[in-house]
Length: 417
Image (cartoon, rainbow, N blue to C red):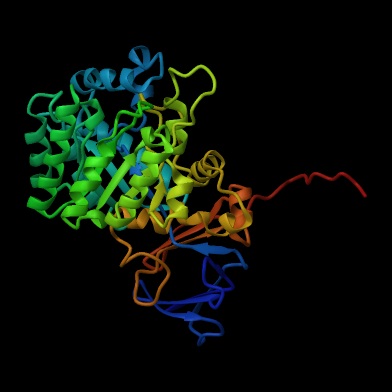
């Protein structure tokens, strides 16, 4: 048994100590009983591990691998066109595992312990999916990986894409994906949404759709997705990712839909860094931010989370798995930085992400749950966010994934008195 003491527990002022036995939290409180092993957290902020609710692990670091054939315009659809060439000429199960491990390490060292990864199955060989299924098992003691069977090149744009998505579910993927705005016509985009919901119900899987990742306000596939999961009472098991065009819709339509989103209880994932980079490319000025209506979702009690999306791939040349950077971008772009906002914004990369993965009943710092948490190099949520705080410790099942010291200086900056 071990006791973690002197912690500032996020959203729990009544607790400063965590008692752990056999990898589980057995007691929370203050002045708990003495045990042989005591770990002092130095008064630092303790919160559940970060959740990356949207990442493409089979793509990470492929931009560097592409070298001369890499993205030039940096647009969304250029990247989608480049991707099949990479799959055909350079992608192997070994390369996917090698690069994905690098991306996972990036995320782990920044406090992430839960990842939902969209894996491209528009590949008859299932190279990426096979690699990711292996990694999910190999790394399960260090990270929880949830896999989406995702048709990057379309269920209908890519011949046989629907069957490949279904086969991905049979192979062990946890969730059904789609990309309706990339299908060749609205009719096929709508058809893909119907397919997604039918497959999810047939195989008892979650849903996570790349939905309306465009500036075009006529792209409204989220409306159909929401209607279907509302009628089937499947909203809590469904996530609509991106929904960029919803940020361009007129207010009359948007607020009607917000009311329907509240009824379905569907989740949303927004990708602040990637979509602010990709969207608004045809705009001169004013130039759109590329985000969905994050602030309005929060104000109306609709679950929304932030994710990384990409790390150095054809869609996005940057990214390093640091969710404090993603959070910082997101709250600026969504304009959610009031004093009240700053006390709860960590939810966007913790609790809200857990709901998108549908693991909220096993996630968090609560008695009876796995002793999974991180320690940030600050003393309050607002200061952690303002300073893009580093992660000093990551604890999984009561054991350290890593532990490091705060920054130390050999020569201190001194401005005098």
